[in-house]
Image (tube, rainbow, N blue to C red; front, side, top):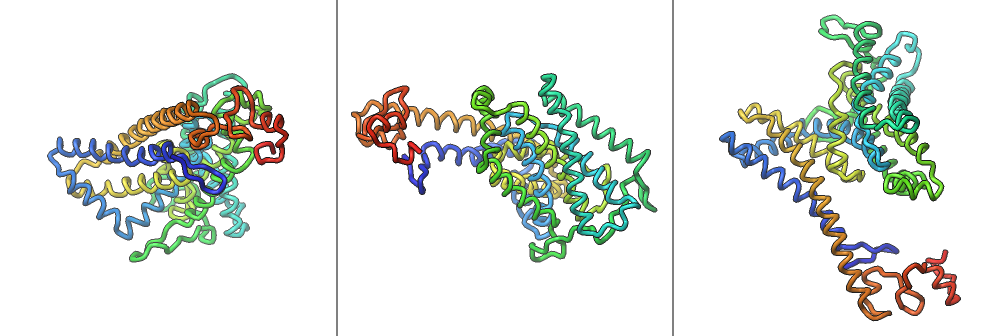
Length: 411
């Protein structure tokens, strides 16, 4: 069954399994978590009710949105690589070194003359540049020496973290009076990003970087789905050989994709640094790997990743109530892990079901007489007289033979 929307056809038989898959995966995750709770002699329904009630509190909603901003940025950074067929697991290191360098520069004494808004822009730009350059190392190793980006980015995570720790503790870090750890200098108050009072019932504000996260999602959607660059990137990820044959420089695409992914990763820790801590601390981290889970959960789609980020933010926040109820908070970790695994399996099953259904429809349609309705319903190309096009013959060639070259297909 298909439904026409404008000039596009929506294959409901193929779309329905894709919509059911994430719901089924979450149900499976909840079921397995319930089993773990029962083994711990805890009531699953009561635990889930407490998590929901706590997560719906105004203060919790603010924190969920704050966490979702960070998770979403990390997920977009990972998704850029996924679209290219790259597995950038170096978001953790790229985010740390990018935020540290930006914070160290912006809080330096020689930057005191820079106006607050300009300093905010400078922090974002520097974090993106440093994150992109750190990812470039892995891109060059892959294109010039054939080193897997999985290995190189994993190693660069450790190297980046150690470099930040060394510079912070031995060179550029400062220890404020009464503080137990060293940080970069405190940013001037005029360069603090203002919060957003969008949640009623609380005095807390959502971190202002949420706006940038939303803009990033729109740019990602447009850049990947509506531009030539996005088409080349996706084509290279789907079939590198075909992309190269069509004139796409595969090595260049790897470098550009990793640069963009690293640049976005450099912004992961900025929501907290600009809106909450106003300095870089060694407490930043752990978000890069979460971004991988959110990207997988959202299938690299901007809306899907947004929902995944909110879900992860909810789980991260609601696990606090489990400790108070005497319920192991590791239950949330089990739920997160099972959710990702279930989603990956569910989407693969949904894709197979969709392909089989489509093959069955095409088989039925091609067995029908030429010019009959099943051919058009299954999306099988037909000639100007309504007959099916012969194998190996394009629609344009068929139309040219019949003298009809003014249709949309021939253009």
